[in-house]
Image (cartoon, rainbow, N blue to C red):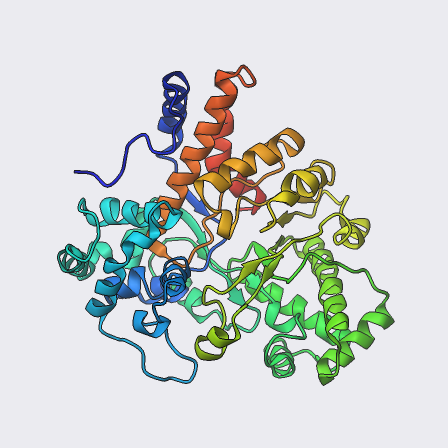
Length: 468
């Protein structure tokens, strides 16, 4: 028995399916380039065994536990830590049983496909997970995790990962990246500069974060100019530790290009904690333009991930903290919001800004036309809630006719779930090959062109866009 259909995600029409199979056979063996994600660099630095199946597949994966939470299962019962250090379930087998008994909740979702790909291809499991098979599968995974070939570095190599980028706060000391660099292992794990904690005046502890930024950079963050210098210093530190990109997770896509005195006045208000919500939004917007200017200077690629109402549930935020599956997509304006930044730097071909969206309607209406004209802009792949077979297909349909393939950046897996990385790339490559096969079958693309594009989408464009 196999959990995976060999023709999954391919067209049902046999002629088109045969083209998709041919394209996929070419790209399937290519190395994986993972230029944006959230795996823990400590895994690769220390190279310890993963603790147990629950801590590998359930507790860290908000795609999984948000679905179970939606059906009334408490996060604490799934082992998700509490902010106050209060009691949560720590027995991996109990967490796994609860997960297995409710695995049916994931039917038809990308999570089911990713998990079953991981179960079968990483651990050799061919039985479907359920309450009945929970203990047997738990034991098989747990036994595997004790073996050296299932340690993080070994899996990195087995997954055929060429490079993986993690994402760290501007305040991170990057100790794990330095430990990797100082080791005798040659796996390429790089960092990404994420300055939200010291750019967003509404981020908890913003004032204290600014002080720490000043200490780390040896710059005077008591002034706006010193604050900008601190960012330049930290970006240089990240770049020295392998970073090729920055990442900005803002509530919206608003940008501003304020004069120096106005920006400095907003910064003083933010630093002193008396800034209004509207002023905080303007400051965030201005800092996106400042970060774009810095990217022209230091060559770091800029990623903007806007449009998520972060931590929508105050109850979950209060008990478990940030990034616990309670972020919700919002409508996002790009045409007007990005205009100040684009007026300032959007025609500079030395700048690369990769735009993501959670507002699918914006892809064909705004983002594809913008990326189809501004040299600085590229479109990131279908993201987060739309990192799915249907979402990927809709993204290609909405963007290709206006932006083409070469104003996009291939695929990135954007995940904390390490074992799902090969599964996510497999899904992306299958969906892209299916789309290209449809173009070939309907006379819109020659087969030799489709082969070239398939290779570019699976491998080359990500390396090129992220300067890897």
